[in-house]
Image (cartoon, rainbow, N blue to C red; front, side, top):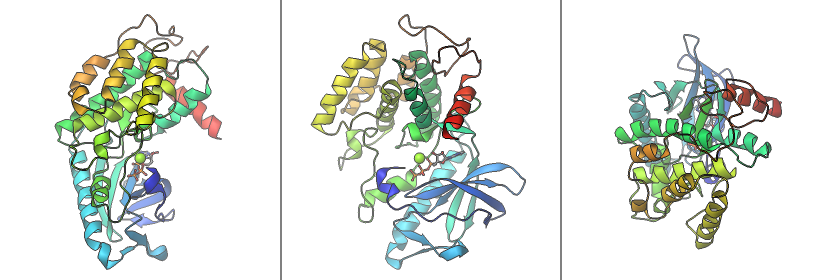
Length: 340
Ligand SMILES: Nc1ncnc2c1ncn2[C@@H]1O[C@H](COP(=O)(O)OP(=O)(O)OP(=O)(O)O)[C@@H](O)[C@H]1O
Ligand SMILES: [Mg+2]
């Protein structure tokens, strides 16, 4: 969810509502373009349901759950809905452990719903926050970063092979499951079409994670735009906070300064790779996700912190004294305790 979409969050369906046989349990997220619910399917399966409900264009009609909109917003609303469905259909053809699985589509309440498998775990954003609070010199170990993004890039490659783009890759849209799997969520075709109109909604992008081409009218967006965002996500895993918005001159200078700092903590190889991904000039970025994946491939680093966890620990945050062999699950549990 971006800052722009947060301003106009729509009213969610109340717990217990029925949508085509699916029972809504509770809301688990909401943004300017919809609401995500935990729900139970007619066969008793736990699912996540995303409701198309762009707050700037539509409203919920009282407790009936029906979506209403002003007549002049109808065409834009329908266009967004078509894209939401197309996005779902394209996603439904992808079967990859690092891409969220679409199970069904529903039409109800004058809108549409995307049913996905329910993921247990936490977003990468939440993991970064937990890791930062440990105050280690490295937020994530280099080997952790390489393994984690190897998985994410595996999913993104398949997305690009299906001629789709994600266009909102950021730590909040990378989910880490309790089985230690990184999964891309929140594919936003509807969001991208709606903001292109510019009449009803503010131009939408997440500062720090969007290449300059997302903001320049007439600039081509493509796989290179997702590659910029991957670089920005890796930066966040190294620094513990998002990169400055490199669209402004001042942000670009700060970014360069951060890269210099990071050289004393991570290998020059990794820092250079992230800097290349985040180049304002798309042709200077790695030329494909596959090329980036090869450059990032996990391997041993002499300057990495000693392995404190029993191998194999593909995605572990270094925790002195930890002895678990299932570090993500432990991190999730620790994270939940912190929130309790
Ligand atoms: N399949 C899923 N299983 C479990 N939780 C999910 C799932 N999909 C989404 N979520 C949760 O819901 C939150 C919001 O989902 P998502 O990122 O898709 O939408 P959003 O950011 O609100 O949307 P937008 O940016 O389009 O306005 C996620 O951060 C995650 O915590
Ligand atoms: Mg999101």
